[in-house]
Length: 343
Image (tube, rainbow, N blue to C red):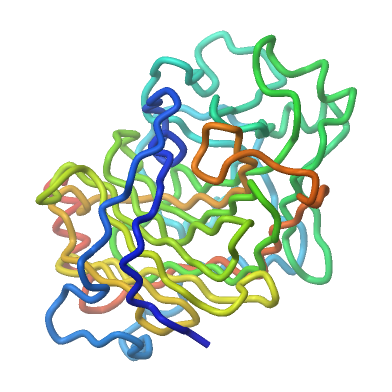
C-alpha cells in the first residue's frame, strides 16, 4: 500500500497550528525533513510492527457507541493512566501557555459555553457546554465510527462564539487530558476527508502543559490525501525545534488506515498500516506522560493547508473507529523510572 516513503520534497508547515498555544502570526515555514526516513539502528523501512511484547490489555477506545465527553473544566492536574477506569474524553484543545492571539483554555471565571480556536484557522472547537447550549455537536456515530464533522456554523452556535473569533465553521477536537502514558505504541484507525483546507490530525502532548515537546502521529492535507506527514517537536533536536517526514502513499481518503507511533526511551518510530515509515532517536524531553488528541481543522488563508475553495465539500467528515495504546514490556521499567524521576 505504501509507495515512495523516502520523499525529500520540502514540506511547508504552519508552526502555530500544532504548538499548543505558541502563535507565530502568519508564519509558514519550511519544515526540517529527516535526510533519510530511518535514522535509528537495526530498523528497516517498511518493516512490520512487532507486537510480541505488548502488555495486554492496553487502552482501547473502539467507538462502538458514542463516547462519554466530560463537562469538567480543564485545569492543571497530575497525570493519570489511560487505563484508569474513570477515563473520559474532553472536547476542545488544551493550550499549554497563553500567547498572543491564543485564548487561555477555560481561564478562571470563564463562563459556559466554551470554545477553542487558533487564529489562522476558520473553525472553532466547542466544549460540551457549548454543544449543549447551541444544540449542535460536531460529534456523531455513523456506521460504527466516531465522526468529527466540520460544517458551516449554525446560527444558534454563531451567537455563542466570542466576538472576533472565526464564525465560518464548527469542527471538533477530542483529547484525553489528564489520562496519559509514558512510552508505548499509540494507534488510530481512521478515514480522512478529501478537500482543500481540511486538516485531520492525531497527536500527543505532555501533561505538564509545556511545549515543546509534541509528537504528530498523523497530519494529512485534504488537497493531497496521498501524503502523510509525521513529525516530532522538541527543544532537544540538533537543529531547530522540529523534524518531520513526508510519506507518499495511495489515496488515504479512499479507505480506513492505521496510523501509529512506537515511542520508546531510545527510539520513536512512525507506522502507516503497521509498516515502518519514519524513525528518529527519542529526544531528551520526551520521557514524560503524553496525552492523546484528535481533531479536524479547517485552514485559513495564511495556514499551512490554506483556505477552503469552492470545491471543498461541507460538511466534511473525519471518521475514527479505533484509538488504542499499548505498553511494551521493554518500556515499562523505563517509564516507571522516568515518572519517578519527574522527567
